[in-house]
Length: 113
Length: 114
Image 1 (cartoon, rainbow over the protein chains, first blue to last red):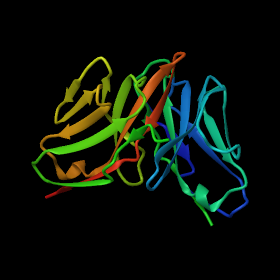
Image 2: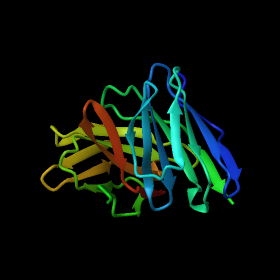
Image 3: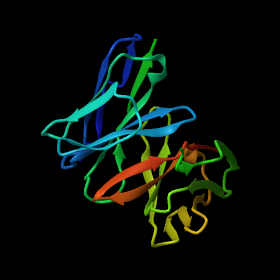
């Protein structure tokens, strides 16, 4: 089984720009969750998509949005980037119907300058 | 409001000794707990889990203990090996309408000294 694929691995953007990150979950998994990891803050939950619908949402501003396609691939978008958005963004794949935890991708390292 | 807390940002242990990583939570509705290990430049990988109906789960060198009354769980690694050096995250979930959202702690960096 192929793992969770996140692209790109690294990104450098300028303040005010917008960025789109992509995640392809494990084949057959219908749930994709996104997390932001920053030093000292651990993994902060952004949102979860299941069968193309946002099912859970964390406490992030509206600049952070996402979507999921019919093939379960998901994209996350951040608009009007701020310096504080620099982080590792992790995508997590699960069946979405059983409490067995996640399989994570390797993440996208976003640096905002 | 940090519902899952790992109060020790780092821990150093000698090779062969026991590593004990701790995690506290505040939400009594959490019913499933997991530990993940993360190496630099990689995503977290699942290590071990425990349901709230149990108080102990063991998998090889790794054992997780759950104390529901204290809202506390711990991960024991025996014996510790240099390859165990990584950041360890605990996570908790609550089943809500058939969905599961995992809340993670801030992580503990374990360093196993050879």
